[in-house]
Image (cartoon, rainbow, N blue to C red; front, side, top):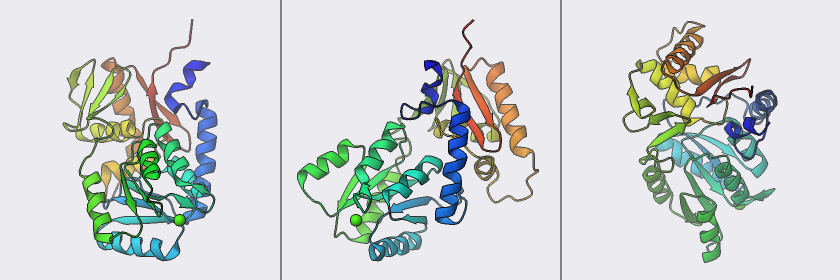
Length: 272
Ligand code: CA
């Protein structure tokens, strides 16, 4: 019973099916809220701005788009919670004073799920206590309003230049490790040769540990703009990766969650 809990993070002690059902529901709400699906790995880096002040929010979006980012805007803690459960962003810019709650609570939940997306906190409160609690809640950086947009972009870029900083340099599930710098898989500390696409699928799954990755996200990640993707291409690469990992003794399972996507987790053996 308890064994099912771990891969989904402490906050979501759910079975895969309950998790899948919730994911579908969350995704539908997200699509309703935003009016479109979210590509996880677009060509430009995608940022989420959670800010209830419409003027500031538009200004941020404009500035960040000019700086070459794709930007999604949300204005409430509830929306942010929902979207962050189903979507991975390069970074999040998070206002603390939201109409329906404290941005810090959203941040704490994110970190509790072991989600290490860089978060830059925005707030009007400049008190020492707020800064301390912001950083303790897992913020990577902190800006007090009013601020210069140039500074925000510069600080954001500093965060984005440090991939894997919060994650460490590698991701682990059981005896499988993914070295983010060398972009290589290791099993029991032994480097493994995988094809470029198998590596790409594995990296995406490992980075999304504890979350379901949609087929579309895998497709975007491995094929990008290259077009002409066979409809079963993702299944083929996932199947190959599964076989490679299992043949080499990795104690992980890539679950297919029908109609939703894929989830990598530690292999669980039923007690005999
Ligand atoms: Ca606010």
